[in-house]
Image 1 (cartoon, rainbow over the protein chains, first blue to last red):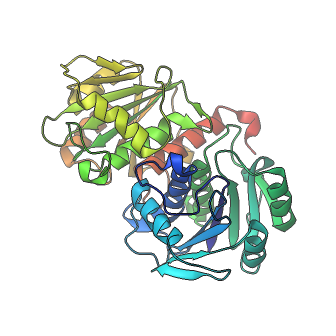
Image 2 (tube, rainbow over the protein chains, first blue to last red):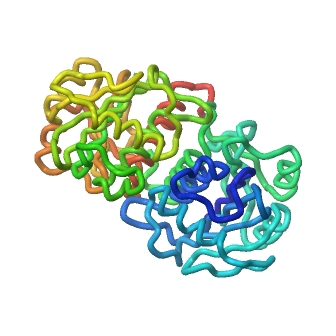
Length: 199
Length: 199
């Protein structure tokens, strides 16, 4: 499995307008991240899970989980994925995962609580521009990558992530958008998993 | 400079609804490609040009050019970029480029005509799954990458592209979405341009 956790510090925690995703606390960023994490050409990565942590008003925190192996009717456009997230935000939920529909779940979880849960199944890797170059790192099996939204993590969030992470990794000398980091991580791992393809 | 040409065989050639980009001949694909080609975190790649070739009804062919060094008010969400394209499709144009607004141009150009023009300034590279692994290729300066939409190029289009291309390159053993190919090409070229970053 590969996991991705994207932290949306401003992302609304109630149903929002599909006609203004940037205005919904940069929900567009979370949609693109989900798309790039789960989808390939005419297919879905069944071995990927996406965790979106929404921390904007009115009811933070909320976490949305999308399982590639279970989700149905997900297409790569932002509006489609936003529809899945909006539906999840309209569902009553507690601290345990509630299934919204096939492959999509919602819960009230803080960053700390979510990471504690995820460390049971994943090795946490923090993607950050001051990390070690990805080419110099052995990414462990079962990695989960933590990525900030367009504004990155707060100092306090960084401390929480670093307490759980086994590595801090950077991808490029250029500051990239969150979804670009996800595409590149997949590319690097796909190549490493397929040795005969590597030059 | 780096260029990208994305061929949208079904993409509408008249103004379309921003609320249904997939229904506008998979305009969502062209929007994501434009976003991933031009934008990085909080910035735009001023050395990139994007060419969208729209071949759907009612008035094909139309080409839209976006210059990273000139364009203003472009944000990474699909709806914003779709707005730029829609505006371009509402402008009367002939075979030469007409400026729609800062950095966005439109013209009536076939694939052949567009490639003839582009070979004056660029080395054409065709991104295709049966090409040579990108790790084994020296990408020349001033490359322009030709990418099909979700359905790829027709056989006739392939012949036209191959007549102009200096190389056919593949990126992964996994079949990727067009915008993912763009993100990865940037990543590969950014690393090659910055040798001290390479492990």
